[in-house]
Length: 372
Image (tube, rainbow, N blue to C red; front, top):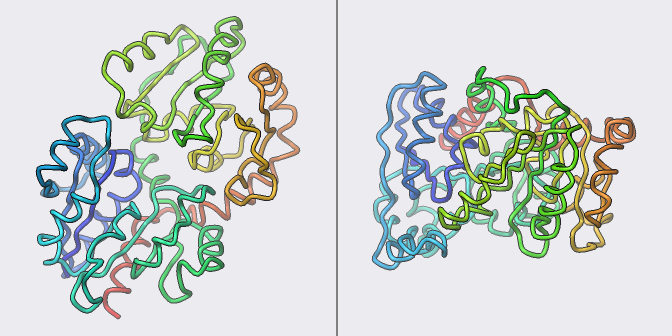
């Protein structure tokens, strides 16, 4: 049984799925190959592999045609994923199954009969509520591995999955983050309550453009809190070195601005913070693996209360104006009792089984499916 793991996007996705490859290759008769697109993934593969004490893998660069190479060189337009899939497809046909953490792989083998292509297995890279995670693309996958019942129930209701082609296994990233956790010293010289601002990148939903400057001014004027600014890595992924250096240079004694280090993708900050401030990132559920106060930013006055894509906004106070941010943060610990039970229930539904072995459960489910 030959299985190809695909990592076509930014390296943050490695933390959601690579550990499943470790578990699969322990199973007799299973061979695993890692295919990647972004060269920066190699560093993260090795970082995770060493944390697990695993033997080396062969890492195979996905094929890219001239167009994809040109887009990659320009940098600001992403990865030309459709071209990469098209170029890589002939090589991927030799495998029994393709395992992916990104649903853009629905494009693979679109013109081939099911009996003439590898099986496609999908593990989402997150446990969030946004509509992007509940796309009809899911119908193109033969088997779907999900963290918890929230995702399963919603996908079943949308008829994106079937009762017989999915399994709940827990969030693999939680155990990978646990392996990577180490005593590396405090993030700040002075111990204070720590706030994490985790902005997403989606236009029309992200809070960065409206809130970041007032937020930095508020925290600079107060020494009662430490602030970690760690937006979704895609927000700065295609920005130039000068822009990234500018934002890092604005860090101070009580403000840490991280636009893309290892810590921004391995749950270091969601584990370290006392209060979460964000908009729509699924990282809120990684933070709520241990319930703590949250404040959510509705930068566009969205009518959100009945929208399942914003279900997490019911887990803390929601504000729309920058001038309301510091009062909301200051009030959050005392108001946490209003949300704690709801947070625990929603985290359980989103993260599923948090006992050790999510990657092993995913591997066992994958092999059981392929042996049907």
